Amino acid sequence: MLGLQKAYRGAFFLFLFLCAPLCIYSDHSPQTANLDHVIKENCESSMKACKKQRRTLTYYLFVADFINSFIEIPTSNVAVDSSTISSTYLAGRAPIYNRRNEKVGTCSASFLCMQNADGIFTDIANYLAVDNGLIVTWFTPTKLINLELDTILHSMVTECIVVASTKVGVNPFYGKTFNMVVSSDDQKIYFELTKI
Image (cartoon, rainbow, N blue to C red):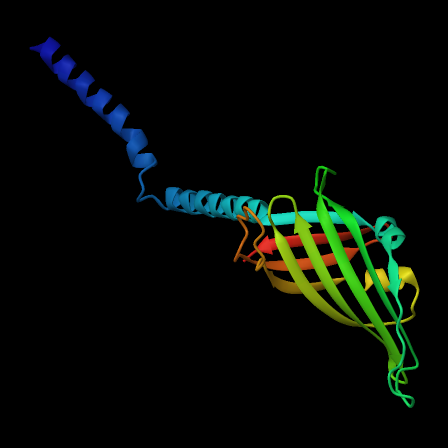
């Protein structure tokens, strides 16, 4: 009888020993609820960061390449008493590179600069074609300080919404919308497209 009581007592303590972690880490405990919330938030923010990284396409071109390609299209005033003091029309293109510094496509743009009594205005028609099928165009109106080539080229800097509305061959981006940020430094123009 004594042996049977010891066996029951041992089984009872074993049962308590096995159940104790379940009580401590139960979903109903406040500590676990807080821990679950923190883990969930961290997982969600990591997933959002990963998705954003996958959805963002980044390219760049060298300013020198673009300037070296420039052509000038002759311009002249049509009216004798035109309000346009001077004008220039430039076009150029340069290879674009990805984050791994691989050549992956072309950027071309034309710059129509017109000066009147109010200043120098430039209308820029931009075109980006990437080997992966992405093709986007956008228009940038801007006001310039002067007509130096560097100033004209850096006037491409903008932020806009673009739609891949041109389909040539296989194009997984056709119809997709992107928020595009064009930025620059002394040597490069950067294009960052984030899928919306």
